[in-house]
Amino acid sequence: MGAVGNVLGVVAIFLGRIPTPGVTQVALDFSSLAVVIVAIFAGWRLGALTGLIAGIGPMVMFGYVYGSTGIITVFLPIGKALTGLSVGLISQAIGSIRKPRAPIVIATVLIGFVPEDVLTWFYFVTLVPIFVPGSFSGPTAATLVLVKAWAEMIIIAFLTVALIGNAGFRAFLGRLGPSQSFRQTPVGMSPETTASSCGPLLSSPGH
Image (tube, rainbow, N blue to C red; front, side, top):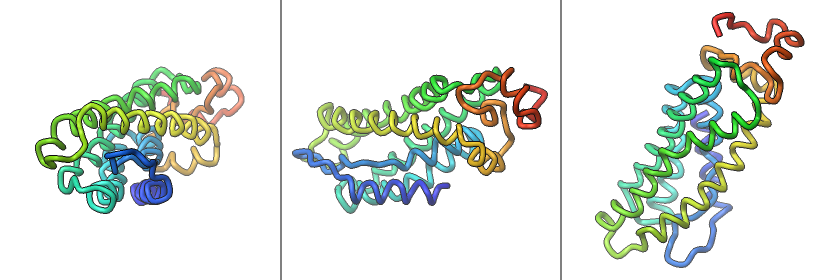
C-alpha cells in the first residue's frame, strides 16, 4: 500500500499542479488515501509505516522536481506518518465501542490529519525561511498549502467511507492486521443490525 500511495501522490502531483504565484509546492496529492486505509484496517503501526513510505514520492516531487526545499522536505513523509499514526489510534478507539457510521469515519480521517496540519504550518513558517532563504514561505504559503490539503482530506474521507462500505474491499484489507468491529462492520449500519444480518462477519467477541 505504500507503493500505491506513492503512485497516487506522484501521478496526482504531475497532473494536478495548481498555479500559485511564488509557491511551487501546491499540487494535488492523494497519497494519504492509502495511508488512511491501512491505518483504519491494519492499525496505527502499519498506518505510520505506510505514511513514511507513501511520502517518499511526493517528497522527491515537491523537494527536488517542482521545488527546491531539498532535504528538509523529509518532513513530508513524517507528516504522513503522523496521519497514519493518528487515524490508526482513533479508529482503534472507535472500533472498541463499535461505531462504524459514515460521520464517525469522516471525523476520524479529518481529526487524524490535524497533527500533520500543525507540522506543515511549522515547516513553512519556521523551517523553510531558515533552510531556503529567499523562498516564498511563511503564513501565506502555509495557508495556501493547507487549504489545498484540507480539501484533499475531505475527498479522501468520503472515498474511505465508500471503500469501507465495500464488503470485498474490507475482506481483502482485513488480512493486513488484527480486525476490529470498526473495520468489519459496514458503514452506516448499527452493530446490532450487522450482527443479526451478517453473523460471522463480526468475529471479535471481545469488542
